[in-house]
Length: 116
Image (cartoon, rainbow, N blue to C red; front, side, top):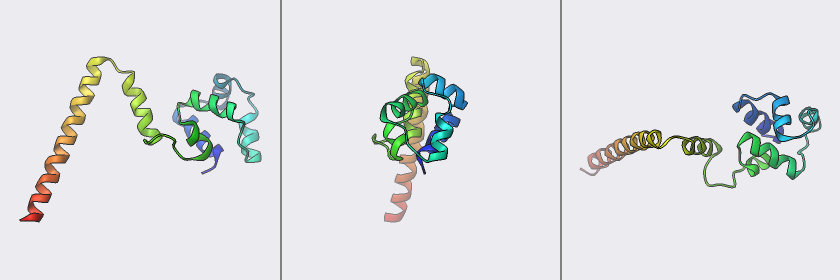
């Protein structure tokens, strides 16, 4: 996937127009169509601004690979989790514990049957 494709995917995920993105990133509006036409990647400082506005990993935006150990979608989920109120975080934690406990129980059942 090319830089422009990742940029467009991240922009659409944020439900942002090209105009909104360029305004928030402080870059010229015709830049995005130019990058698409030329197949070029902008300078690092512009990529950094775009990544910040789109809340994506800079390395992913430029190269398609994450610098972090987690996928972009998981990172975005984590950022949303951080914004929750404490009571909401507790609810999410209880749900995750319930799912992982069920997975552990299923794993134990499956492995105990196969070892019998």
